[in-house]
Image 1 (spheres, rainbow, N blue to C red):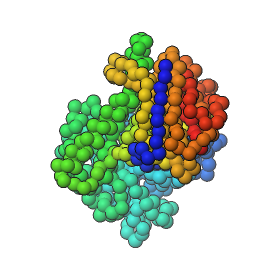
Image 2: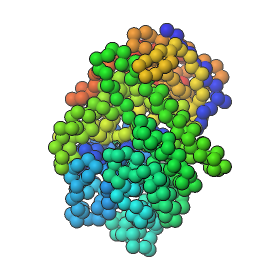
Image 3: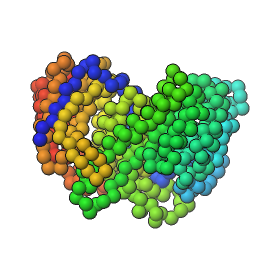
Length: 498
Ligand code: AHR
């Protein structure tokens, strides 16, 4: 099979906002307790943070981390997580039916985020709480000094304001599972009034309003329109969430369908962009609302196990999906789709980061291990820098149960002017055929391959559990001005030219 692409320097989709490589830590399962935070573990530092986790997060080069939830957020009192640890209350977490000890809270998160070189994407509870608590949290975090809350922060050890710029106005407020779920108009009004108050405290904030928690929710569309109608002038981004599963294991053609799910992601993004722009036009506004895709991933492996977990534990094994090779291929494709929409997707968060539907797993009594999805994410977050270029790729296509015209060749190219490096990400979705990939780079000054890896050859159901680490991309020999490469069947490839 053949495939080709032609890339031209002037054909730019958009500069890449690095926050598109964000991730997410929720106070859920073992994300925090025995994940990020485990005092007494041999790898724990003076703050009780696991240094083996810190090092793995740094490899991913995640610039922004959403916190503290998620569903947890909608019933959380932020004040529980500040002050002396021995005076913090232990509470019921109604979202996940866990015990929350609050030994890890705002200050711990800020310190940890700094250690992994990330900025926070903070969130305010609009489920059980409202305007006042949100404005208080902004004052506590961002006001310099001289008020009760800013001085309380200083007393709790943070002399300088946290200066948190990006804030989510609630989480999945359209979802019936959410504590304090709202109708679209209830949420729109509360979000707008909360945004106004938060901006009064700090007018430099960037605010994200909740879009639909899924494109499948019956209120999708109507929700976006109602929320934007009321909040347009007071918010900067609308959120999107999407998780993918693999549900027909017995059907041999299901893999073709699974690998086409990035078309769904693309349609979702384009649909929400159209809704934002329709409201913009109706309001005759000059302001553009961009997207924060603040939860995305594969999530289904742990669904059955989660129904058997006993409630009211601290740090239970919840949402511990173990990812296999086909998941890594889909995650690569989803990342390329986000990049192709970088003109409007400015923030995105792989949900989540540690232990909970995560690329990084910890053994409570041992070390960390990297899931299959760690690798495409790491490569795109590290090498997908600069600008995304328009892709004129061509290849044969196929149809699947849900999708039509899925190209076998999925590819995207980025160019980083600072290092004068061109990076081509390319996936061959064909299950048995190699793909002869012709790259026309003639308009670029790059003339040699500096690095090439292939991730392929594994059983699609193989994974890295039990510390096996068998799944990872391997370097391939490529030298000179390599403009033709063979992509192996079911492979994720990265080629870097300088
Ligand atoms: O990321 C896991 C959960 O998925 C989050 O808590 C929630 O926002 C979403 O439904």
